[in-house]
Amino acid sequence: MASGALTRERDVREAYAAHASELYGFAVRSLADPGLAEEAVQETFLRAWRAGERFDPQIGSLRTWLFAILRNVVIDLGRARAARPTVADGGTEPSVEPFDEALLSWQIEEAMRRIGEQHRRVLVETYYRGRPYAEVAEELGVPEGTVKSRVYYGLRALRVVLEEMGYED
Amino acid sequence: MKIERCREWREALGAYALGHLGDEERMSLEAHLEGCPECRAEAESLVAVSRLLPQADPERFGPAPVPPPELGKRIAATIGAEQRSKRRQRRLRFGLGLSGAAAAAAAAVLAIFVLSSGDGSGPEQHVSFRSLPAGVKIAATLEPQAFGTEIHMYVKGVRSGTLCQVFMRGPGGEAVSAGTFRYRWGGDAAAVLSAALDLSRAKALVVHAGNRTFVAPLDNGKATLHTQPQEEEPT
Image 1 (spheres, rainbow over the protein chains, first blue to last red):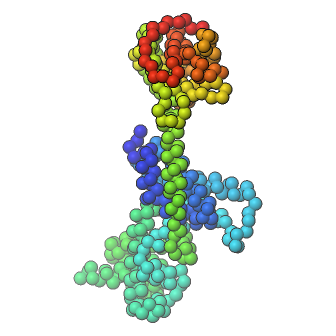
Image 2: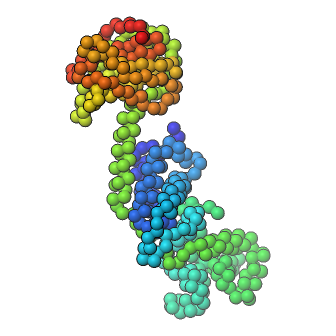
Image 3: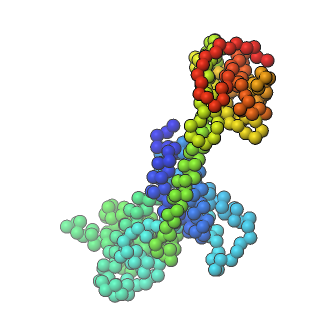
């Protein structure tokens, strides 16, 4: 049995503490349904537990492995849901984005959440909203050069967080 | 001096990576990048990060949803229950064992040890055959059922492929078949058998394995330990 295998109840508890929030957050984004997301996370940990002896940290991180399991679970749930008639839910269409694209989006959004508010703010204003640096600087009450340097440190922080999250391009 | 100069360029690299610099500023920065490998590497790395940005939805930068606390408890409870039933299954599974030669060679003298289960979960009996040939283990768990007796067999160390026939003996010495199974190396299925005989009336559990017969007398309800030489021909 490989050491590090996910075979004890304690291993699962630790894995849950470390990764459940991320898995759940992604499942909600991907499935657009908190109830279904709970189901997906529960199924992910149960499958991980049942296949625990096959987990080998030499091959990949626990996080990567759990996301790979969640991927299958979400696909299975998606199939099951596709077989049911869709009920319009406040105008929200269930997400049909392919999993990998959704996972990439979610990782970047999660990284954005983890960087500092100041950094996130300037990236949102200048990049996503396309506002001029001078305007953003005035709104924030800082020199334009400060906005520019925050954009720089913001991107750097994003890079560090993505690396910490195990993002590999 | 150079570091201070680079610092200014560096702080423009974010805007550069996002394509936000005016032509003039961009061109003078690019001229610097030509001659500065460190700044160039940094610029490339930030351009790579900036290429990911279109994938994200800024509407989703707010706090991520948090899993409800009962989710963790529910998973722990399910896994705990599965763990317990797995342990139970494992006890009943065939394990890997020693070669069958040991089984064939040794005398079929056995003792039995009957325990009434102490966990209050039911009147099941654990029967483990003692003084078996070296390397061989045979054990069973008997559970009273409406149809008779459920028998979970555990065999270890006999030759792979060995046909095992299981009987129970009734009050009059009659044999009631509980079925057959084959022991396999590395086999992983529990042999669950059944006999149409009430456990309370059963006098013995009989296992024919290969050319050997093992008989475990049952003394229901009482913990007993006795040795009984037994040599029967298989039917």
